[in-house]
Image 1: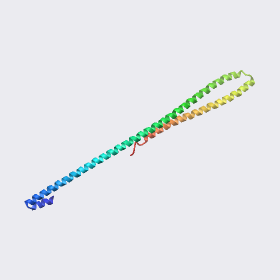
Image 2 (image 1 turned 45 degrees about the vertical axis):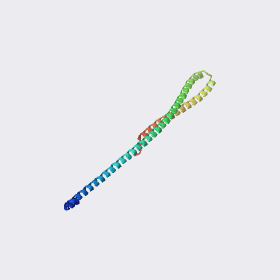
Image 3 (image 1 turned 90 degrees about the horizontal axis):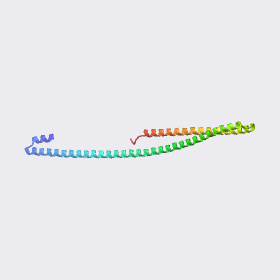
Image 4 (image 1 turned 30 degrees about the vertical axis):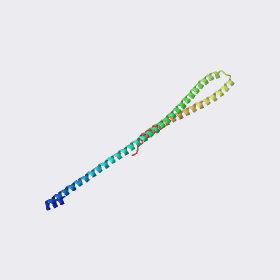
Length: 178
């Protein structure tokens, strides 16, 4: 621009007018180019914003899908653990029924002991042998029931522990891609 002004100052009036027109035309052309560039930049920025918005929507959908799958998996695990706990509970109830039956048998053996005292010596020895055998058998059965009960209690504790571990692991898992 400085060059044109210098040229315009040196030349005739017509040359100065022509130089001013040229300068204005050049300024208008530059303004038009700047406007187009600004429009392109704005368009590119809006496209980038739209692309980022779409990518974010895809990420959110993927995270929601993973969360639904994780919930479904955890629900299935929980149902399986509840079924196992129910089975262990039924097993424990059956053990309790067997224990009650052995208690009943013990009380019956006390009645038999009273009757045993009124028998003759040889019959008493025979009855003593039978009663000892029955008591040993019953003691073994009670011991077996106690062992079974301990196993069932251990299974229940293990199942509860595994449920807590699964819940803790699920809570610690990341909620989607980084």
